[in-house]
Length: 237
Image (cartoon, rainbow, N blue to C red; front, side, top):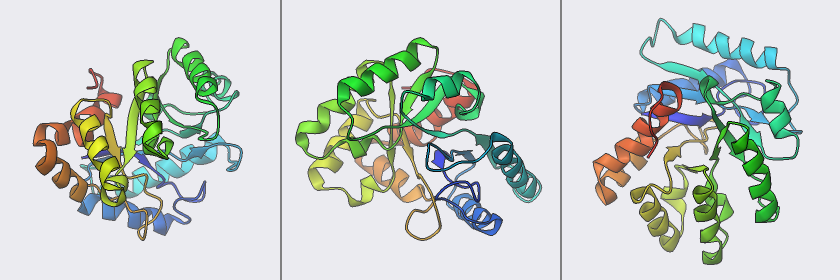
């Protein structure tokens, strides 16, 4: 499996605090069957760090695991907060796409009017980037909000949900999300891991559940094939 959303780089945001935390998270992910991870520290006004520090700590993690777990691949990106400055940060290289691809993991402001959000996303899309909406389930407060995800998908965004929502959500929401996985409205299931306690880098239980409920082919798509296509190329479904 491949996890495209994780906070495994220590000391940058609200994820891993120390290199030891990073190691514990990565070992947990590996033992769960994850073989590729994109490190996505927050890029927003609340967590200030320079890109050199991020790259240095990322490389430290890569070097630490390259012999012991040579089959584990790491890629670097950001979880970017959507605001009027994001496009400039992407173009200027201050904010990283996922693994150097065109894909950008974007966290939305859930209080902003949808039309404003769509305008900023449209500007990003016409500049050559492809948004992946992080934990898009957070857009859904009630059943009236379900169409927000459909609208964003139709304008060219891809959708990522956190694995936790498949375990803890209300029955109606879980059924709706499974339908959207099946019809390819939602393309990625990721951990959004921050630690080894309550926000863990664990995917296998959800993979098995999705496989049982809507088929192994869908599970393979959203946990492996689609994530790999971000960095290797190919059509995401």
